Length: 165
Image (cartoon, rainbow, N blue to C red; front, side):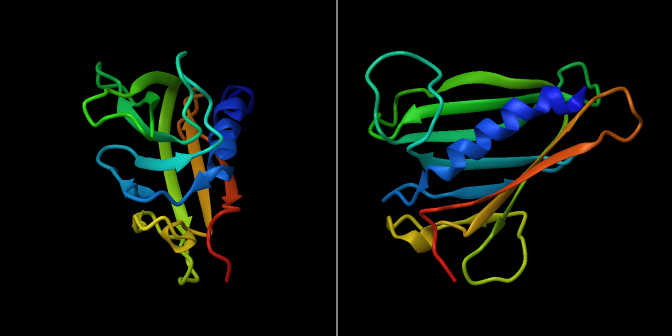
């Protein structure tokens, strides 16, 4: 079922978000990329990343999640993760892996530190201060289960290193 398919990926993203940090020169961003399906791009620095490859480990990794549409033009796509060490030179290409196939939607929303409502797009500062992060992030993933209207699976995560109200 969709719950079983979606549970591990959504909770791994949530785990990485609990380690999100404000990083000098790196922004925590959520961008709305909705065209033909609900889609967000989520990028952040974290100390709780799941590694995609071997080699020297940097305590801070930069991760990005995005939905890549099916090349056949179907209603699904792939949730893709890109990851690179925070100290890697700009010329280093990030490692990339498919997190989940059969995804109908991937959306992220943030609860900014000074706003009462969730926002579908956000870019924090790059000063390395807690206010560069939102207070919380909500992730929603829709998985094709053969239904006309896929069931969305959601999790909301408070960011421990983010600002407090």
